[in-house]
Image (cartoon, rainbow, N blue to C red; front, side, top):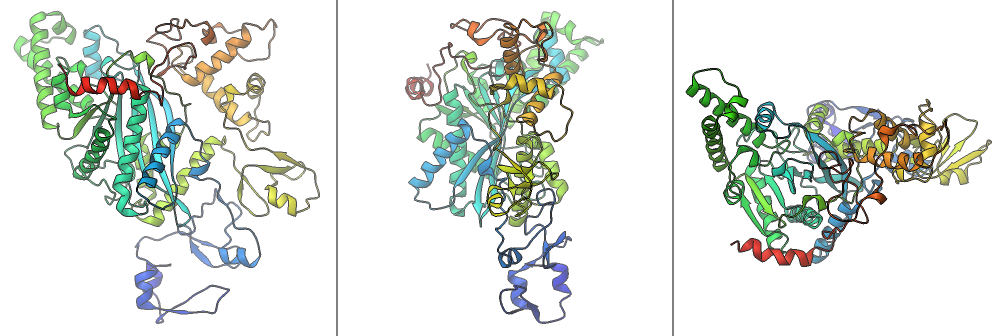
Length: 623
């Protein structure tokens, strides 16, 4: 390819090819403009091959200095020198898998076989799976306080799921969504509900004619998964009435995505709902206004309260409007607590807020959809079997979209989408590998299993180069880093003791990187003593198990004698009902709580079909 400024400066009828293995061929100017010209007006970063000196667009060859610190070697020079091509191991295929990703991938594979579509594998990965806190807005918090209800931030589980496919040998992101799963520790109207904050997709799936159906299948598979976990409802919305508002994940600089406006999102959602009803995954689909009427919503606290949703702002407006109305009636300054104490004022306030809320629900009923998945039951039985995944670079959707916009790259341009996908995968792998990446000194490829020289500084070789080359010094083999969480390793206490004293940035101690990250989180987490943090809970269980049997006066294990980190171990929990104890109370346990072998959990991943069929008829034919 040739950039647009260079194309304008051409003095000849065309340019000659620069392939060193073939004779030069003249490409005419008119053919060049249609095929090879990058018509972007903005300047692009150029890099030089360190062997032949030819220039390439860094965007086209996917060059990142942090990935290839030793410089770029073009494919022609690699072939002439008989060197193996550099292998990028930081791909979606090498990201950790879990039960959710395997479940959706199985559904996608079945869909492709049923449609007889021969294409590259579609890989589903959960990039972030963390417990997060949502703070209640000021007026809503004051209203809850006046009603003598809890005003503390509540927990929910946020998940970020992306789909990737290889196009021309390079992985490209084709689909993604953000979801919030609310368990027992959420507000009462949120419990047992899943909120799909955002869905976005691109037209890079091959064949392109099956894009929409594939993305609908992915979302239907996710909703089936959360239904099998035991969630009751799923909420989706098409966006706001402002068509110019940026709504999506990949639409930072362009509106050329498959879901460019509300109308396109409604079409996609209708296909999802059709799949859910045809396969008996859902008992019904209704808009939010009909759902409020069916559930007999009487107060503003009965509406689900989701992070990133429209209704928290609407509730703030309803409270302010009703408060101003009551203040005009009294013609005196009055507080919200005084209004709640006066039955007449309280009735006027609640009726005014409810009427205004219902009017707003009616206006937005076409944009907000509620899917009925399960018959409501005890929310404490809902448990997520997957471990937490800390994808910090992609956790916050607004920050991620702003970062994409700052790069001035666009997912709607294919080569820029490839570069952005490679950058995202690099950051995710760097987080999973403790911010430490290794490169082979011979073939300059990224490596996981490596041989390190004990004499030369930062000298690593991949297994192939180690067999071919005879390095003069002794080299030690390092195995691939384990994907097991640090607290589940048999050497956790020794690792925990090591990282509490280790000050090295690049320590070669096994498991130092992952355990140090867990240690830093444990000593700074504000929810460490409450049991709300899943990671801190597992670490506390390991420390409690050790401290109950330790009789050393000066034990080297950190927090061994600290009573604040001790918790009730799972083996001591009764096997009936909701677990008791400080770590399992409704105010202090984690979002989904640690799963226990003694607790009966009828809603497993694959064992819900009979339970669902018993309630489908009851949902579709309510009394």
